[in-house]
Length: 270
Image (cartoon, rainbow, N blue to C red; front, side, top):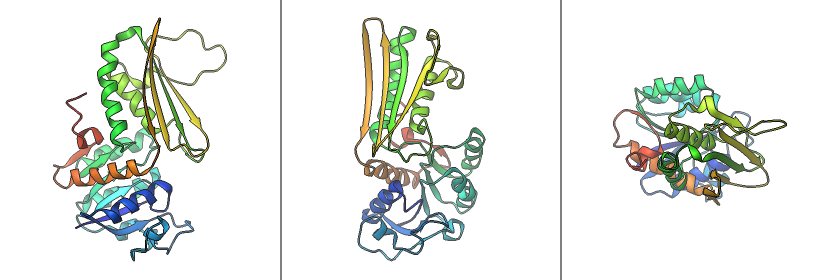
């Protein structure tokens, strides 16, 4: 069985991943990592996740926990991810990163480091969202410049970053299909005298409230009609299943940086 470490193990997403790993017949939970100030330090990781105890207690030292050829599933925070990724690569680990909120510099550093290892990095691990990404790659050029494009995302009221990493990735995919740079055409919300909408503009809007797991809406609008592509997640377990699927993909992959489109075989589709 594949030894697996979950980083960010006591969070809502981390707990879902712990449940998935503990219940998977091909993986076993080797360590569970949380921040030093977590109130769950020293507690059984499976018990925190709502399962029977598994004998793995939550600790804060990710570097010490990482063994050679381990799988690492990281849904923590950017600084935490950056602190251990190089060590994980050096130990020939299989690294799955679902952390969001990286700066452009941090993303560039991960891309450079990952070239020497096996890494899947994606802001959203669900099968449905990644199919949505692939669909946007197909739909956008088919509709052409006559259709305005807007992205609306909604998440729970405790999510730290906005817009979501998934919304940014959808915008990047649409911009790529349009043949433009996402950074040049993204418009984060509108206020006051915003003026007419430009042709290449990609509007991105964030909603925060309650316990919304995750919703993403892509709107293509033109005179006389509107097309909407929507994904709604009702359980974090769908993301956890995707993360475990990414680990199993890496076990037989060549060195390099991958995303969930690679894991799911959707690159040719898009």
